Amino acid sequence: MVHLSPMTQTQALDILKTGGNVFLTGEPGAGKTYVINRYIDWLDAAEVSAAITASTGIAATHIGGMTIHSWSGIGVRDTLTPYDLDKIASTEKTVKRIKKAKVIVIDEVSMLDGKTLDMVNAVCKTVRQNPDSFGGLQVVFVGDFFQLPPVTKRGDIMRYAFDSIAWQEARPLICYLDEQHRQEDEMFLSLLQSIRKGSVEEDHFTLLSEQTDIGYENIEPTKLYTHNADVDAYNTEKLHSLKSSSRTFKMAGQGGRPLVENLVRNCLSPEVLELKEEAMVMCTKNNFEKGYVNGTLGRVIGFDQKEGWPLVRLTDGRTLKLEPVSWEVVEDGRVRASIDQVPLRLAWAITIHKSQGMSLDAAEIDLSRAFVYGQGYVALSRVRSLQGLKLSGMNPNALAVDPRVIRQDERFREESATAEETFTEMESSDIARMHEQFVTAVGGRLPTGEIQRQKPEARIAKESTYETTKRLLQEKKTLSEIVKERKLASNTVLSHVEDLLQSEQLVWGDIEHILPDNWSVIWPEIETAINKVGDEKLKPIFEYLDEKYDYELIRLGRCLWRLEQK
Image (cartoon, one colour):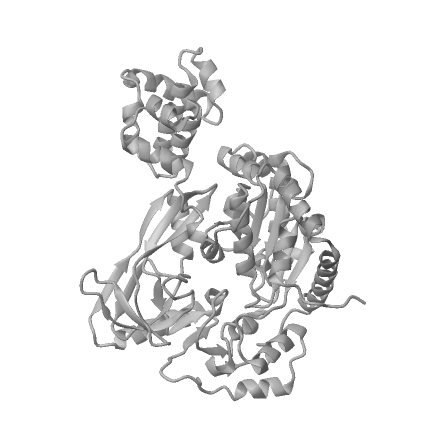
């Protein structure tokens, strides 16, 4: 029998740094997000390329990454034919990012269907031409299977990620965090743990039935509903009931249209935010420096006279001016798309689904229509204590969790205890050597000194190589001047140009000054060649034109051709 000793955040981080596949799990508030952000910062300091992904768009915006569907190129597919696989493996951008990555992080893995994970595994193997799990990448799963399960199409059989072939091949070490950093109430914590064990008793329902009011003064709880229609109706009704005049704040976006649209769709702040004085609001992003986090509640008490930004009084009495912030898709150290909006949403009500990952000050929860495993648990675990909980509805099955998850969770705890025991017995010098071997093997350098901690959106704080090229082009530097200043090959600079144009961070007018004087003659010939042989590779175009134009001109021509196809 394994002694189930808890794993600390430091131990989990040490295990991650060895380069082995890992499943980082634990109860809400155990510090999974903290650990994974520290690991990503360490990889960045070690110059190891990591793909940061998540199972859903909302989760992806929380960590400054992409959905796993977008990153892998599988998109909305629910099956992967040989033709699909071949098409993905010949898509230049997808191939480039999959080959460049050394580590892939998949957050909120509980919401990823096992079939989808198998598809991602197949794509990575094919693109990287490596039969090992995920094509030889270190894969880091992050999540908690007691959270909301995968959503599948009607008629499809749902498989948890841990039931997939990909999971079995990856054989991840389990890091089960057991420290509690969210819940402050021992009785409440005991209730949540009983739900996880499937041992909810009559006393627990009695305890919840007593939660008829919020125990804090001057806090209006956020209502958590199971359905969007209830949320929208309630928020609209409450806003319209306020007598003051409204202010609207419109979202702005930059970058490739599909990526921007995906950010907009999954951002917790609306595209058009309408506010009034006395409106109940919730912060939708973490900003530790300013003193608010995703889920912080407050009330609008006015608007800044100079710029008009909302002034929000938080539940602890502080007043903050909420200015626009950015949500970004970051890949390879550069921003591929971003949106800017005031980080607020109306907070009289929110769905349980959208509340996943939040830590609320106070919530009024209606579980009378809870309809899937985990919904009741996710809702209850949003608050820190019974004082912050008001229960307005309950059905007998609302606290049910999937028996398969309970059984699997027991195995996860045992495997985590074994891993913890193994690493505890190792010398620290041996663990450090494993860290160095991993970093060296993937072409990085072991970081020295203290690792600078960054927020997810600040991982690109230093000017990326693409941003430098973009700045020089906008300063109207010639190609030869950029090559000289950057000490890069011209084809490398042009690859930057190509990506910047495709992601709409540059427009054609930004680069016209680097074109030759006779471009009007060259372009029609290149256009004809691309229409004839396609745009996937430069060599066929070069050969079709009888080697008349060099690869630099052909690459520029392909840039223009692709822009015109959008």
